[in-house]
Image (cartoon, rainbow, N blue to C red; front, side):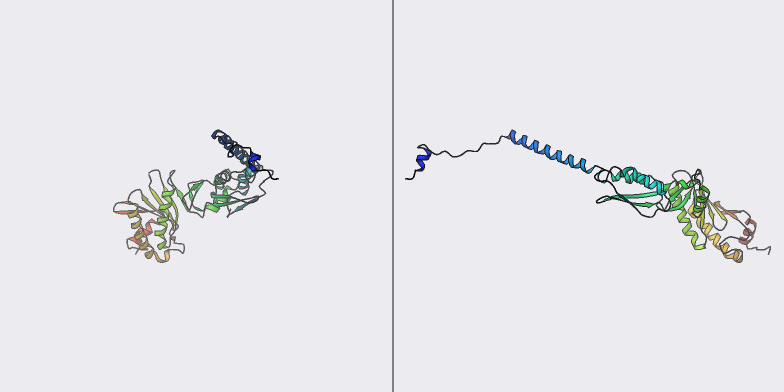
Length: 288
């Protein structure tokens, strides 16, 4: 004999089942606890990754051409940070440390998983000497290489190495402007087969050029463009008249000469070859 549902449930009405509701404060508490657990996990993972014993830097690769920078100093600038571990070190610290070295123009540092650091370096390319102890790069950056400091044990040898570079001299902060001027003068002199060895500028910004042909040119401060053009015209005509008296390197067999172009209506000549050049320019050569 089966038992009816109403007998099992009783004779009263059947009420719907109601779940317990979660209050807003309970939800907030659960959210805060979950966030704390998540942050704790992140901190634990970060501490684990920064463990230099678990994740050491095993290899350091330096890429790029290093011709002048001291390799021991370069290694030391990198290694003082590699002990912090592969994930713990700050690659910007390495970059800044490397770029403080005198010959390093730029550095790029990157991690290569799982344990390698790559350092790409670019050295300054010297374009000219500046005063007695500095160089100017092709990007017009001024730097002081240790090779040109008088306390360097190989100072004399290094000066001979850099002697092939043109010499620029001037006041602090004028290196960029003088390098621009040098490049312009060099370009204009090239058509005469003469190169520019030295460009000097005094405290009054008055410029003097020393050419490879034993010729000095005083341009002064004002109207340098006009004075340079006038010198080029005069010198080109002079070379044509000298003929065999000009040697293969552009120098005169009669010695040095100084052209002072600072006159408003002409120029003056000085130096060993002044008398001979004056005769040539006036059309009277060899006493004729």
